[in-house]
Length: 114
Image (cartoon, rainbow, N blue to C red; front, side, top):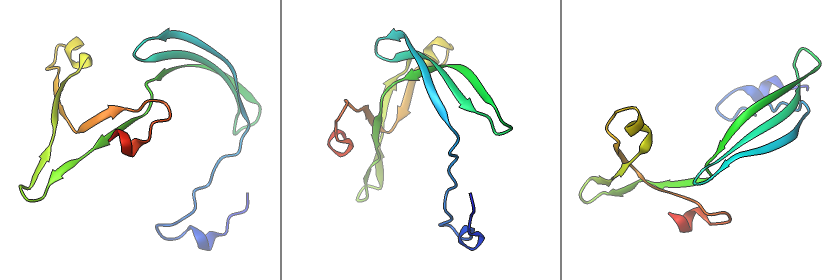
């Protein structure tokens, strides 16, 4: 790929995208509940030549949207306190303070969800 070096200066420099070949050979569902865990088998080209076959687990949780709700008159930001099982498992405080957020349903508009 030939790149015009004069265009690489400043904050609007173009992103160079790798165009190496890859393919997804297999998807195996390991668990399907609130989250979905899949095992993927992929093959991709290597920069030094040849190909590489890899197996990776993918935790698919779907998309989410978060909203920072700020009241300038009060100079206050709304946060929520939610229970999270990860910290509970580690023996830590499972009640975390977070921005308002939620999971998107397939095809749902993020602005409508917010």
